[in-house]
Length: 130
Image (cartoon, rainbow, N blue to C red; front, side):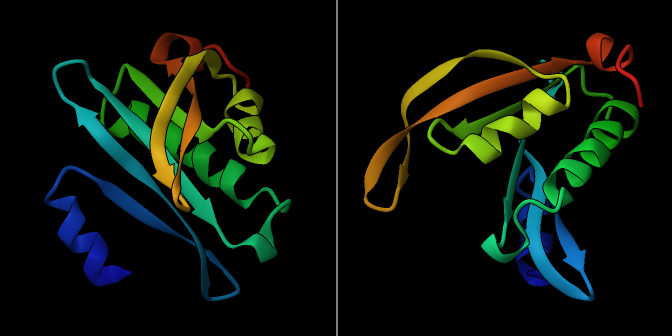
């Protein structure tokens, strides 16, 4: 994970490990950074054994703070597989608004899947309760 993360940071991504009890149980990070638009996507994954514990929600909330305050992004975007209700609930829970669906946007497990798109602007984030 560390070697891969160091390599991809030079390619415009910024991955972070989600750790529980000393073990990596997930990954979260910025990707698709657009310096001109001051925006980035947040992507995340976690082990099925730790689903429902709020780890990715907490990690995403931390990424919002890092993205808006440290990186200076004006917009953060999350794209989640449309049929993955747990993954789609995270941006909704954190104040993102749904902006649409990217049809056949990702090739996953041998088939094309739709991705729901959610966005949160800095101005909206700054008014949310912490």
